[in-house]
Image (cartoon, rainbow, N blue to C red; front, side, top):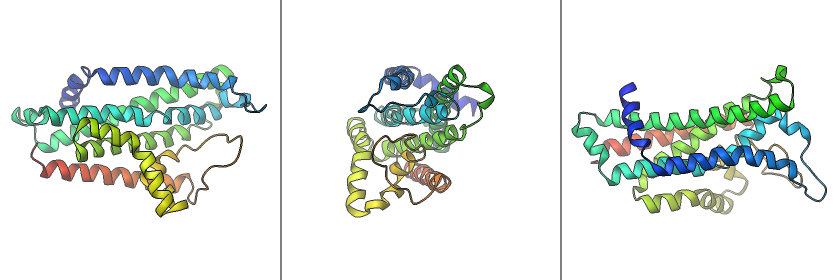
Length: 250
């Protein structure tokens, strides 16, 4: 396992796209969280409790979730570049099996998920400690767990998408449009059942913390049910990716 992770890291660290996207993400998430104090919608402002436990975890996770598609682009670019430049074929020549190559990519997906989740946790934790009582630090932490599943879902979908499309530019464009395409298709065909489609399932694991006006999509299942469904989608995406790579000449 360590050998596979080392090989993938040696390739990832040269990826300029990864560095740019991660810097953008790491700067914008805390900045947006801070700027919420300046929001004024017809006299409505966010209450001070959003920067305290347990809401700090929920808001940090929700804001971070806005960037899941963007960070998923790293996996799209990395995977399609490997297919384009025959890097995986070279890995096989060097002695790696297809199974090892697939496992290595799954480690990349897990690695990004863990990194993003830990960063999100620290944002929520730091805001909560600064503005609230540290004795409440475990209140609301389940939102970070839900965010981990959400992020894993988006990144598994990105890996699946990259293996299915293979063409870098087309894969990125369609990937970024995927939520819009799903929303349109779902609203036409399923209406309120669009919430059971994969990307909507992932996005609703960490719902909007506060809705000042109107309402959000009424959820038929609770967070527990949506979590199980999200994990099923993750397994489906990983399984299909596995089958595609096993059968394809790389």
